[in-house]
Image (cartoon, rainbow, N blue to C red; front, side, top):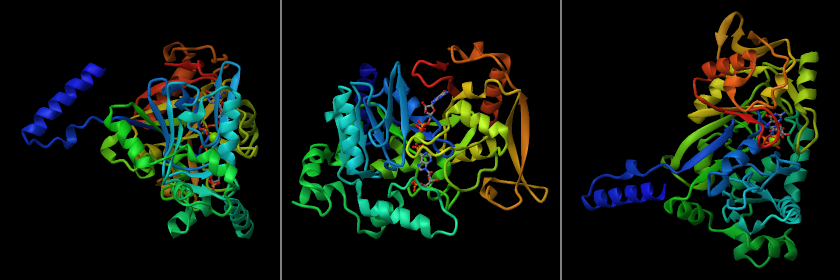
Length: 416
Ligand code: GDP
Ligand code: IMO
Ligand code: MG
């Protein structure tokens, strides 16, 4: 790897010397992992898995509205702000300028990790990231109460914090470095946090320029993106792969692969359009078998079949190069498994843009289910026929390769 990289460097040097255009020759170094649905696809679990092969894992958006669960053996972690590479001692952890961070949550999370014997000195926060204060939380709750139709936010003050950022009235981590006191930040908090703050742009570019392998961790899901999700029932940040560029201050040329995490069915917490939602006992069964209760709020998640129209839309939004399917084991025991393959309005086929239109109808393709437990399988080719057919059909509908299929919560429970 290093020898290869050195060779590339030498070649680039030669070209630079000869005055050749080398911009497009710069190898892409950062891969990005994003959720393809409405969040809770199992991104944390997948980032934990991939992180083994990277030097840095960087979060680029969102805040403690995220809840990322990782299970390694008997040990279980629920992360909100610290990137999901934390269980690998060699990995550096970075929270980029596109994120909004609640100090109390961050300190609590660091304390919990220290308790587990984790070295948290590797956690760095960009000076460009914004701080979420208690008044943001209050405003979030008041905003929800005053809406005719609630968004169902996580109540963490995320929207108001991004509002302040855009209104240019927010407080950044940089302000903790340059001001002696910031109202609402105690001296104790200041002392705890200061050592983690870095020049976020210099940090990430230094690592990319030094050939470090960087994994960019998305939070929330593509359909919650503030610009391209089911607005206004969205979060307040750019959750799609493009958000990694603005959230870290890197160019699109720095991005290599865009890997999407797709749950084998759909869930959504809070309000908003959900065309494939099941309101019957099948939805309840998905919730029960999948443990679909919010990591952050404990709220029951709405459940439904996989929505291929939505997934294809997410593939396009992210310029996806491959996907990972999670929670396939949850479908075990269903006699028939559905996939939404089309939307219709007044008989005419429509796109995802119309997902919230009144009177929307869905076309559902039904596939045979399987009854065998599949958590023990490690090869996709060995899965029961019907499970394999399901994976094949999803691959076909998405139009990108499936890198692996997760069949359980634990790190090793996956089929390649
Ligand atoms: P994230 O927000 O995308 O990181 O996902 P969450 O952690 O909020 O929710 C995913 C939940 O599903 C967590 O409780 C995971 O432990 C669990 N999970 C992840 N992958 C699998 C899987 O393949 N099978 C099962 N049964 N559970 C999984
Ligand atoms: P992870 O990273 C699922 C949803 C909320 C609400 C909407 C707006 O764990 O996948 P916000 O508090 O962001 O203003 O809420 O977005 N939401 C999530 N749903 N997983 C998440 O994160 C979410 N983060 C926000 O439920 O509908
Ligand atoms: Mg989650």
